[in-house]
Amino acid sequence: MNYGIYPANRPTQTRSAPQHHRPMHRRWIDGAVIVFFWSLIALIILAQDAFDPRSGNQGLREGEVLQTFLEYAVWAAITPFIFWMTARFTLERYGWLRTVPLYIVVGIIVAVVADFMDHLFWNTLVSGVPPRSLSLLDFLSGFHVLSEFTLYVILLLAGFVRFYFLRYQENQKEAALLQAHLAEARLQTLRMQINPHFLFNTLHVISDNFEENPRNARRMIARLSEMLRYTFEETGAREVTLGQELQFLDGYLDIQRFRFEDKLSVTQEIAPDVRDALVPNLILQPLVENAIKHGVSQLEGPGRIELRAWREDDTLHLMVCDNGPGLAPPPGGDGAYKTSNGVGLQNTRERLKALYGTNQHFALAPAPGGGVIAHLSLPFHTAADYRVVAVNEG
Image (cartoon, rainbow, N blue to C red; front, side):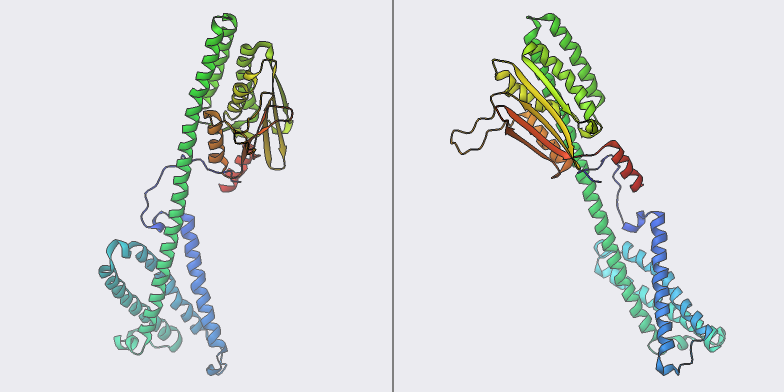
């Protein structure tokens, strides 16, 4: 389950050749693939010999079967070395003039060794010629060495393909990790931005009420201290449960009730099955603040704010409604409503985009009968979902 970004607290590693940092279990898998590949080649060669009409249908001798498997076992042992060489002595690092002669010299040596071992196995297991009777001309005669060198070239090309594929994979992982670091830094910047914004606005409310009602001002300061303690404790949290977010919002609304006295009423319709849902930390407070600043505070009569939260399939819906004057259309009368681009709402948009990408939606719209509806939707997920993902990835 992916909701946009992953934790970005992993240390960055310096990369050289891709396979140098391969986990041990990955190396075992690579070895198993090499053994399987060369065993399959040996079986294909044996099957071709067994069903070749030119063989007189004499079948395969036991020594010939063993000789074939040993021949390709030599190539299975050589393959990891060739893969290591293509990753270690790259054209980018050493250039053509140094790497090409190296590849040719190594290819000649590998071809001679492979051809010698082939002759050794054949003469020992099939023809019955003792190893001591072999000479240099025996295994250099004909085009056997050339065929072994051709096989080496094919392996060399496979090594290049493997190296650049692994490097591409690592580049993709590093790019994804860099994006995660950038997104994490972006979120932390937004969080640090909203904390002083909220604090200064709340202090302004307290200062306005301090001379007129010192008792309420002291109670507001006490509430503010509780809220600040919460914000400091949850500074590093990108998401909290909706229940925690509502608890914090209750403290903020208490301060606003002190300000408006009996002129502000708040109703909540929170579905029981969404209180454990994870939401961005401090996501509702800017919406309520906007409803109070541009809605309730503009009324001469009582103000009303309604909070709703419900779930539809895999989507969590959050809604903040007010009964203020609503959204005003522009002077041109094109039907488009003006929306606030203040710090709180702009911060909300950017945080939702950073956390969930395109799997979220946030909009302001006129409420029936007057006022504004702030509606946001995001993927429904809980802390249990993250634990399941962590277990599956582990």
